[in-house]
Amino acid sequence: MDSSETYWTDRALLEWQVELGATDAILDAPVDRYALQSAKPAPQPTTPEKSAVPISSPQVDAAGFATTAAETATDLKALAAAMQAFEHCELKRGARHFVFSDGNPDARVMIIGEAPGREEDRAGRPFVGRAGQLLDRMLEAIGMGRAADDPAHSVYITNVLPWRPPSNRPPDASEIAMMLPFLERHIALADPEIIVLMGNTPCQALLGRTGITRIRGGWVEVLGKPCLPMFHPAYLLRNPIAKREAWADLLALKARLRS
Ligand code: URA
Image (cartoon, rainbow, N blue to C red):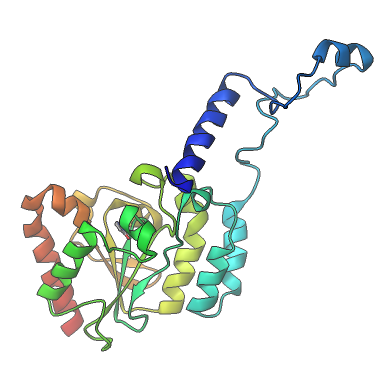
């Protein structure tokens, strides 16, 4: 078991104990609570006490902290540093690597995916696993690639979240909301001409809606920029029949770049 798996196992066990009503950490030596109570009356909690251990606190305005941190970043390097220093996203503790971006920051096209998976978490780079390899082949089919120096033929790639969710589960709404200010700043600083949203998670983050089967292939606007929602390459691996629509969307992207 690696350290990130240990973290999530320990956390699940702790949450389970809290569910059962545990309010104190167990000590090495036993404590006679009756003796303590007779010495000093226990204070009455004003609200139902769930846990002595603050696992997460809904009172913290994580999105507010993220907004402030993102605003202070004046370039991509500073943004990456600000995100790495952000302590309000629990996923950070379970991840091996922070995954910021890949490709050419000057590219005309910025691709936004969901979150790192196992391979990306190991490598510290987005889209390097099977879905990423398919993405590279898709881009190559329209004469583009993340390694190209020329902004006209290269892409810049990032994700909604920079840390891997456990077991590759989809990011939840609070994780998306707290990291959104960083994503918006990322788009503003990279300043692409066109944005491509891969799958439901970036659509939820930036368009406020999901339903990729219906919204894919239709141009929309995000932060004043033309934006194309597409099927996620991982979806295409599971549903090869949908590659026909993905090809149509790639051609639409290519045509838009020519116009
Ligand atoms: N899926 C994503 O959305 N992003 C990655 O980086 C890898 C897989």
